[in-house]
Image (cartoon, rainbow, N blue to C red; front, side):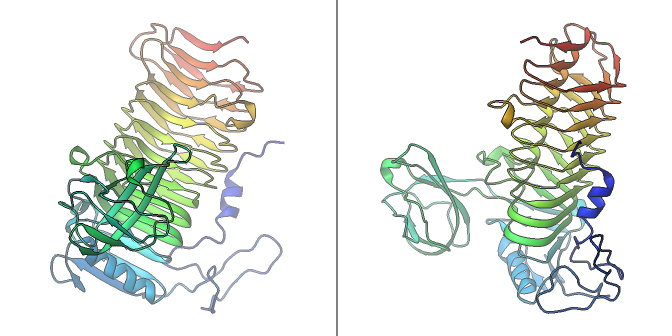
Length: 446
């Protein structure tokens, strides 16, 4: 029996997911427990909370605000104050906010702006070598050149691990200083040695959260100043970056010009990204990351990134629906390493540079993206002259591709609608429509 998530399962999984805005008067329970008809605020109960008419809101902006300022320190002060009282809203007024540090959200915070008129951006990045060694238990570093670094800055420390050759990446905040010597907000817990070519750079997400829940980010614009900032890997940063979080709503957010990912979430569950615009980012438009369960990605627009939607490792039981993905340099949608039981439905994937929808081959059948459903999508003008609209590569099993429209307006050349790679099994193709291709379906023989 297929374990593909259907709409009823999505509703069930969301039955006890609430935003900081409050909950309905009646809360359903479908496992035999009685419904909560009269919610009360009860100590320790994070699932059920009354829908209060008014909750704590702190405004931040250039004038006439509770906290007057346009720096990361001003926004962070508001976030920390609201969090200390159990949660509420931080409302950003119209204006340009120049962030020298990531805005670190905490549980039960709603960060809301004024749409296109609220812009969070950042200055150019700088990088320098560490002047002396710091060991794993240290809470300080010494820089070779401290120009461009200030107390309060978010930083990324990187080095080569001298034991195994791997990369060490540590994100911290500078909290005190004497000359080129800086104290960190937390201990290193990894060695940073000059023989490992240790460096410090002002790289960070614009908005981030770790080990938090019940979050909302709404109605604001993030600009990563891509032309003047180094690339920052989407496993550590992005316009928005979240890790080890749950119950998150990101709505009506524009994330643009980040030298990395537009929006990235790792080991993050029940994340909704709705009606957002991710464009002109160097890497991934939307990055549901490793281990993330039940992402809901809908009504978004993604333009001119390297990959549109990238299902990373072990992303399961998700829905990507009604998104428009255009002008992507690589793959419009990419699915791979144990990304199982997802639905990709009613999306437009147009003018992808390499592939419209790709199932990555991975390291063998047990690693592939099985039991996914691709339905009612429009995939148009995919790849070069030998491009493929939907490419299901080797090892992938139990995928259903149905009721999609696959269109080429540039001429057939050597273009293929659906390609089934060597070792694919139980791939169901049904009621797909093809226009303008050299070959509708191609099966590569073992």
